[in-house]
Length: 97
Image 1 (spheres, rainbow, N blue to C red):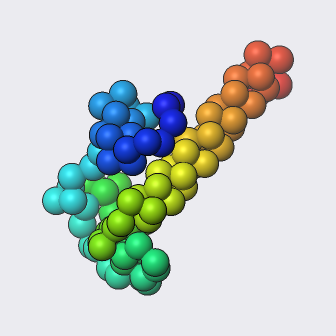
Image 2: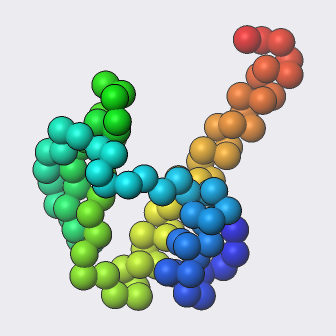
């Protein structure tokens, strides 16, 4: 991933490179508000026909600083996911699983 000069461009680039998956709001059902935070509201919802709940964040009134914070949160999440995948590869390569 690149550095954050233009956060909106960073998000668009991450989506186009499939680092972040874009979901259409209309693909979610049973949407229920569960809270709110500095950047907007948080909902829980089912995606399509899955019975698993997902957290949806509805972002509002974002200035450049707030967008950078959101991007930073995404970067941390992506880093942790990549670290977990790497550990799973190591375990599998040692025939532990």
